[in-house]
Length: 65
Image (cartoon, rainbow, N blue to C red):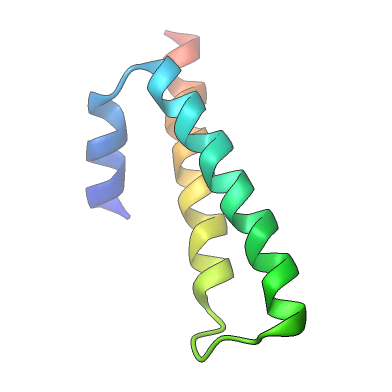
């Protein structure tokens, strides 16, 4: 996750907001597709949620400064 944090720190807040909405959409699509077609790696959804949490943490830190 440290690698992701460094990448997110380099981006602007607008880019981070766009990426956050994209990840949220991916999570919603995954939830729907898991019901009908379960994947081999069921940990994908958890990884995406953690990625979103890291992104939102960096974004909130940028907004405070």
